[in-house]
Amino acid sequence: MQFQRASGILLHPSSLPGPWGIGDLGPMAYRFVDFLVAAGQSLWQVLPLGPTGYGDSPYQCFSAFAGNPLLISIDDLIEHNLLTVDEARATLDHLPTERVEFGSLIPAKQTLLRQSFERFRSSRGTPLHQAYTRFCLENAEWLADYALFMAIKEAQGGGSWHNWAPDLRDRKPEALARIRCDLAVKIDFHQYVQFLFFRQWQSLKEYANRQGVIIIGDAPIFVADDSVDVWAHRDLFYVDAQGMPTVVAGVPPDYFSTTGQRWGNPLYRWDKMAATGYRWWVARMRQALTLYDVLRLDHFRGFEAYWEVPASAPTAVEGRWVKGPGADLFHVLHAELGDLPIIAEDLGLITPEVEELRLAFELPGMKVLHFAFGDNPNNPYLPHNYTTNYVVYTGTHDNDTTLGWFNTLDPASRAAVLTYLGRDEQTVDIAWDLMRLGMMSVANYVITPLQDVLRLGSEARMNMPGRLGGNWAWRFAADALQEELAIQLRQLTYAYGRLQPAKS
Image 1 (cartoon, rainbow, N blue to C red):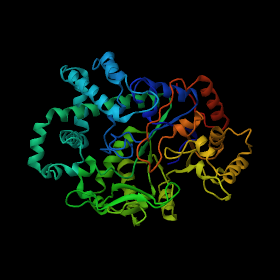
Image 2 (cartoon, rainbow, N blue to C red):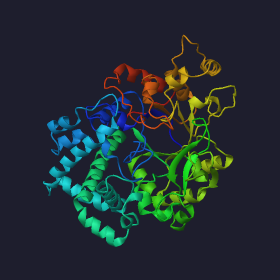
Image 3 (cartoon, rainbow, N blue to C red):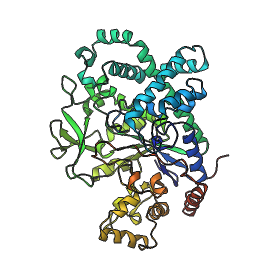
Image 4 (cartoon, rainbow, N blue to C red):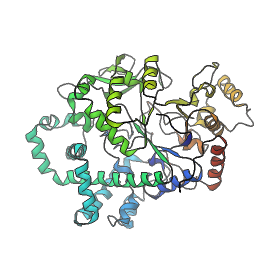
């Protein structure tokens, strides 16, 4: 699918400022949309929006369909009389505003959500209740299993489903029927939380779309081991009799790690998926395309061939390449869903077969400027080698910020960057110079992490692959998005033909 020439910003909602411990879908999200419009940006890219588990990574979620309760707007709950300002302050005021402190935030926000749920239950018959009932009916295909999974997890002390009582772990019908009765209120709570998330997200998305801002989402190719997706569909994954993975996902040694990355996600049994007409994948993609206007499909190369690692291996070095579903899956998705507004994350070791798969469905690929520089003028990440059907980034959520990256380059690489930019050490403005490179390129889309727009250093890095803890916590300051910054960004955007006509 060919996209219109445009530019935008990569920012996860959790990084928004605000008083409630984490960025959310409330007033500051709407102000960020206003900043995008003022700055001439028509794209807002977010990371996956699912409910995060251990490690707080949006790429390891309890469900591929559900939304993250931590992103629910407290201000919206106050506005609908489901919470009071005093309740919110008493519970969340101790949390820092400059970073997300997940360990303290999670129980505090859960407390507030439960308070709001009790108030919601006591006011039945309202339009909000009617909307909730419709939501549960319309999303029953995934919501019933998700709410049951989360209720059991909570009752079991939060442990992985592999360690539940065998009859619950193995989804024995009698045990599930009994637990649904025992945990009826908890199940209702988790459905209510999902109702809040989707209601707030759709309102925000509609606000953005009305002003000409396109939302780009992100879908990890794999799902988490401790997820409702694996628990409810064990036959679709390579797991043993206890539900434990026998092989797991990862990537071989690369730019980020000399031992590769052992992600630990269970791998799909693509033969079983194909036998169902890829029903689970069709449902997943249909859901994603209601959340987003465009979807970045993470680790696209895994659809052609993926790195299979024995579950017993401590690193990804011992893995092997195994063929994925290839074009067969995308033919089915196209037949079921129509044109696929998908960005293929085609980074890493890309073979001709991966490129053929991407081109067969006219999916734009990715170019990352941090990977561009060296002594090879034919480097595919250098802008003079681009074609139009690409999305160019200064860096991604896995990279250091551009300023941090530049400051750690060896002298030869640093000199190569300056030569390409036509700059020297005195004149270089590295974050905006790289952003300008992307803007002037022929790539249809250019997306810049907000950290680079703000010229921030390594302290603002979102994620360091392989590091345990300390990731996903960055938030920007409430006064960062000044009018002058919007004017400068708008001028740059206009200069390179990426400013879209204003919506009436």
